Image (tube, rainbow, N blue to C red; front, top):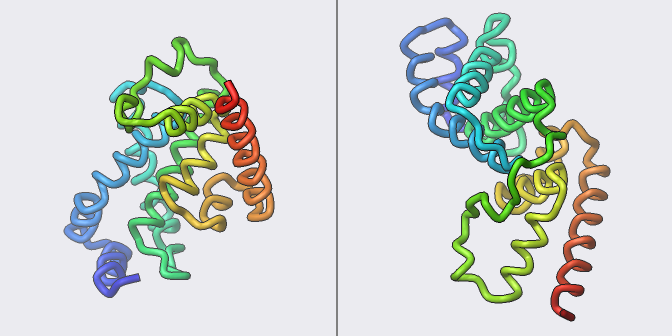
Length: 190
């Protein structure tokens, strides 16, 4: 944790409105982006209302009970405030989806109709096959892959976000990677 982060948190915990306003202003874009990314992982086309609800819920959770959640941030293991807030935002978004049972809903349209981050015209056959294999993973498996490889989070953080043991996270990751390898072998032989 940087000295700047320590001072900002300390001032917020003292109840200084100006510091809280700075905190919200500084981390709003990060949290908003994390919410949208998590919802996109679930192939949801969320309304602005849903995003705003989750956004407000995250900031309210930080100030609830005299900043109890914010007080828990320690910056252990070189964890920055930004990475901790990303984890909180991801966890809160997933909790919100569970609450409304979005995670188990079937898609109304095929995955091909959803935009991807990489234009497919720039991919070779192997990359296209991988992209297709990733699209065909169940939502909970896509989340694990995203957290490990896109977000580059350590297993401990992934376990914390998904509320699993670290061992279970490694097991799931291994199974998913084996499944992807098998799918790519089948695709390559066609």
